[in-house]
Amino acid sequence: MSSRSLFALNDYMQRAAKNHIELCADRGVDLLIYCTLRSNAEQDDLYTIGRTKPGKIVTNARAGESAHNPNKLGQASAYDCVPLVAGKAMWDSKNPAWGIVILSGEEAGLAASARWSGKLKEQAHFQDPSWKKRDK
Image (tube, rainbow, N blue to C red; front, side, top):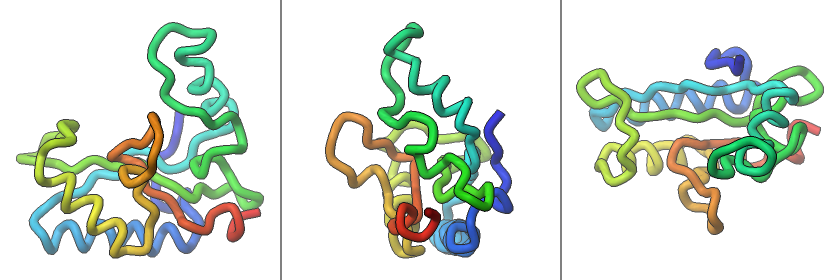
């Protein structure tokens, strides 16, 4: 099972995650980080969804190709999060809380996958913009 601990993140991401949470809170949004480190086996399992397992494709990254996968120190360079509205996860991407989450994440120095082009951009994913250079 993937981790949700901030301690599973590299140092840059730990600082950015704490800043992201604070920036969101300053704007009235509670932020829940629900996935940080994901094992290579879990990554490969996700990769099979929509290919050899039923469902819609959820990732184009195989093991070792995701910023969620462990670096040489066993740390992740990405996390997935969701805003909480009245204590409940707000998955509706049209909710204004998501705009605050994305803006705050970028202000914290993170790459927001909501801004990526292509089919698999997602609201919830934030990563170290330099993870390939920093972690390898």
